[in-house]
Image 1 (cartoon, helix red, strand yellow):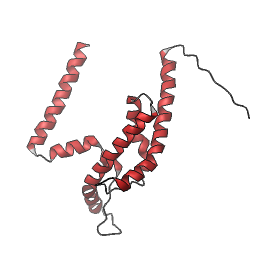
Image 2 (image 1 turned 30 degrees about the vertical axis):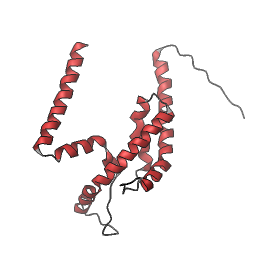
Image 3 (image 1 turned 60 degrees about the horizontal axis):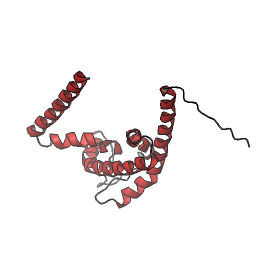
Length: 163
């Protein structure tokens, strides 16, 4: 068996960013694969969790792809962030299960058991949860949400104008 060694000669920044992109993709896939058994273990031991992710397991890399970029491709830091994110996602998906189940029932979905509920990891989005919590406060939540959005827009606009 012949092993070929490739050497990269970085001549400009675009070559360096291409190599970094390949490393980042590999880290995302590796951490995503490592998160599959970790998520199953977390789902079974996490207090308060009632979600057992099955169909959602292959999409684990999508939950942590930005963590890979933030951690510049570092596998260990990305894995630690991934575990923290998945704990949060499982708990939020548990909180949204009654609403998700109600939508499914209204859509004509039938369950095997009467007390069964369904959920999905995609509803475990922290931004969606934050908005849901704010909206549960009624008009106060709407005012706070509008204030946050306006503050962010003004901050970004001011920063853009100063550059």
